[in-house]
Image (tube, rainbow over all chains, first blue to last red; front, side, top):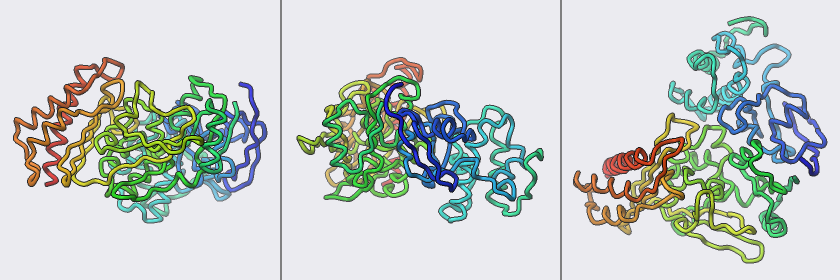
Length: 174
Length: 281
């Protein structure tokens, strides 16, 4: 593909980062993976069907495969790599580990981002008392081909309900 | 390919005139799929997502003027009272992530016969506001907007500025058939909007013809059969209404369903929608 590459500047997981020569037809997903070295968001369907590329774009969960890289110019982008901190896994990540909501793991980054969004909205009280149908609706844009969704929903319940879900080290199994 | 950011609406119109081959992109939920699969190689992408003027909606003279950049999520959260059927249709679009980006104007510009907003826009008598740098604003009634499969009345130098949708003046319904609740392209869909002041009925059929269609004979029939005070119709009239809706469809057999199934399903959807509307009385 010929044409001018773009200089892309993002606030990526809180840090200002720049990539040069990003082809204009590249998606935000492609830019994150190939130009910013963040392979956490996964490339699966490339049509918004599977949700495995979900990231936060200025605070809103989106399919990064459906955002042109240039549309994110100057934006704050949050990826799964930004969830854990020096103290270990985030609450949402730990809930997935504890519930055994991970099998092959390919869909997990996308699920983690939408559950993180649910958690933030629950804390902001824009949602309260989610029932299972509402949780399923919130997760409707994310496909898992291994586990089914029961353990994922268990993890969501744990992440939303219990602020004291025990933290374990990254290697711990569910 | 080049990436061009439009900073203002005037800027966007000027660029579209100079570069009619530039592909407008807002939510990107249709355009990016085509780029990702290399189905389309436009000379440039014209990004409309930063244009502030497109991100608002307003109520003007009994209609909602819905800016081209307003997402489905915002339609659901902010307009469910004024535009109930559009909010119902918006809830069936894709997934939360898609609804956070996708727009009604983008749905129109893609002009898929299966676009979820289209039956509602037909049923409510919406008007598309297209604009070009040289010729100004052109108001295109939705029933003249779709010209073929994924084709619409927009000229190469025109962009959609807003969609003007009459505020609900009576009960409205939208329903859609698909294989699951989310991420579904409609097998078929149906919308109905009653105007209790004007005593008119509007309908829209999706995914059952080369373009979205209105069932005009069914509308006229129901106007005469409906008791406008109680919103009741006889069972026989309701059944006839369903048949007239099915007759208005022009479906084909394709990967999502057969033509005969679509006609049958539309008849069922139309009768059910009428039942839900009577429930509103």
